[in-house]
Length: 162
Length: 162
Image (spheres, rainbow over the protein chains, first blue to last red):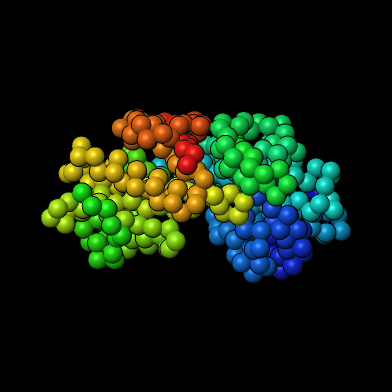
């Protein structure tokens, strides 16, 4: 697996699984009806923030991540990131590879910590993954997320010092 | 004291104290060098979000608040707000009036909770004010804010159910 910068052309391969994940509305605080063009503007954050894709040996895109500053001004030493893994390629360590890549990026870019603002507590796969990489839940917004199947569930704020 | 919608013209009266507060860099994660025009675009959030001013009997602007949705998609039932009180008019209950107003707005607008994403822990006046109105610290980002005098201090995430 290789992680490289996302090109504008990659979006056509990203969008199908991005749309599946966002439209399901179970794991992210993104508008479930986000359209293809708006979603690209949303995802392709401007430099020095970054957007990458994880690709296999044949060049197939397995997942994507965006990495960005999370606070401004005197909080600008805090980074964040968001990950999307194609469900057709789950269980291959793609999410872990993207998360570890983003942590390395943030550290190398001089950030002092990473923060996730809104991790849905029923997304236990992600919570466990982040915890295994050293993130801790520092607080939970009670009933912060209206899960389509589970109803109102908590939104974790997670943090890792770099 | 009256709280009313902010007009574009009000910005000329808001900017001097807004600039003083932001340039001091002690209480907000805003770029301390934010200029007058950029700051107005920043502060004047689009409807249905709101921007208000607190004025005295003579029409003098004492403080301002913006109120906005804090999360999107299935987290869109969470509101947030930010307050600026002219230091020349501190101690008159302006911050409390603006905070209570924003809580009422959020409740009336159908939000289920309010969240502050980044309350500097050394800003004890604000923390105590928010707590007295029913907000609770649900987590603290360790060393989340680089205070110009105190160094790295925590950033509280605060929450109130509506």
